[in-house]
Amino acid sequence: MRLTKMFGLAALAAVAAMAFVGATSASATSTQLCKTHTGLTCGAGEAVTSHHMVLASGTVGQLLSSAFNVLCLSILIEATPLGLGNPQSLHTTAFTFTGCGTGAAHNNCTVATEEQPLANLLKTGLEEGVLAFTSGQQRTQCPNLGINCLYDGEGMEFTVGGQHLTAESTPVTELGGKFLCPNEGLVDGLFETLTDTYVLG
Image 1 (cartoon, rainbow, N blue to C red):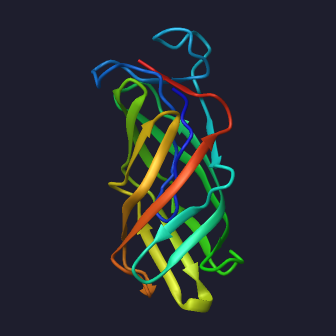
Image 2: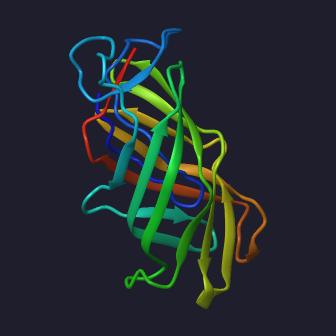
């Protein structure tokens, strides 16, 4: 199954992942991201070595909190699969946010990645899976509002299914920023892959 949905704002995260065609249940078999889907295993030379995702057209990435809401119009994620496994580990090599803000102009805030996320991708069923972040930090700043918050991506989980990776009110932890930084935020978003990517066992 092809991955196509996700958000990674403050802690995302992220970062990283794809869509699934795979086993009917979680199993101990290896997982490998592949460029084509012609069988249950990845053919020679078909393994994905780099994966790119963007915020889906017509959507925004959102970091929601009790003190403020930040929306980003564009997010680019580049990720590298680290090898076979169940789950398969993914490393985000780039996480870029643009057009971020608390108002319609989307220009009064910045989101910067201070620690690139690591994540594990686990098949849980036919065209279903979970992407769980094990690290990653993003800083959200809105100088005109006195916002300077650092978010931790560890523990965030995203559901995979129907060619989507979904972050829907996914909690993220604030690590001790300055001023208006609640202890927790929520992340929403939808990502699309730039090329077809399949998860095979």
